[in-house]
Image (cartoon, one colour):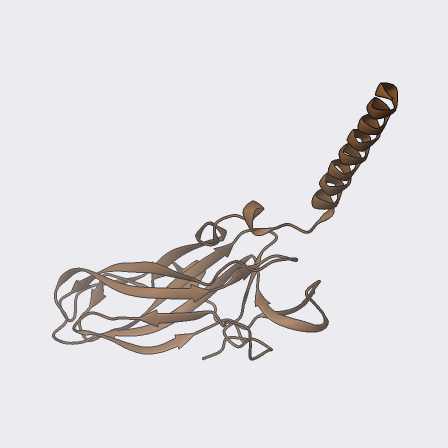
Length: 199
């Protein structure tokens, strides 16, 4: 009787061990989950540039926000292909004396993903440049100035999307008196304008 109880107990232990092993193997086969994804703010980095140095009062100029997206990730373009997708937007709060004339977004690329196999999505990958057309009024405060902007985006990889993020960006530049000598800055950014840009 004792040996029969031991045998039954051994059998139950083997079954339990088998179930645990099976559960582990299934967990390893599952797609990447939220606990293994990076923080949303770590996936996208932004760099800022201004087209004039300094910016004289009464002049128009541009600011560029170069957005670097981590490899393996993408974010929706400014004009996504589906209404439920969160677009990339840039909200600007210019200080007194600085006017926002326009915000220009690059066109995206059509790509297919495992979560949308039948429809290509309009997305940004790699590095993209968003542009602002600005003007310094005649009464703009002289000296160091900063234009705050908020970049809103949602980053995804092939299997999962991170929560939407609002990234605060500061665009610094120097305002000089009207007629001051200035120079074109960062021609590698501002000398060309992509034909696929969107307003």
